[in-house]
Image: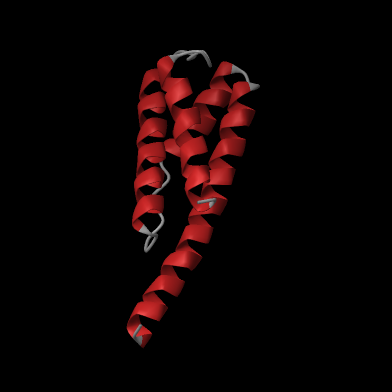
Length: 107
């Protein structure tokens, strides 16, 4: 393996670690939103919807992160002016996307 490949793999590993931290953060925010009043929950979910993908992650981590961020944007879009129950398809999709995102790091 040449030096460039080693550096690239190390960079991806470090970026994957940053993405994992972001996944844990997003999971925590969604849990807080679940126990918040409607206005607070909307604000928290809208905040998640503005997250940007972590650069230089491995392909599997990047795919999982993009899917979770897309799920947050969809959930935030359904939140405008009303509450979205935790049993809604959008909420469940966001939770599952986070869990999948977290599972990528453990593989």
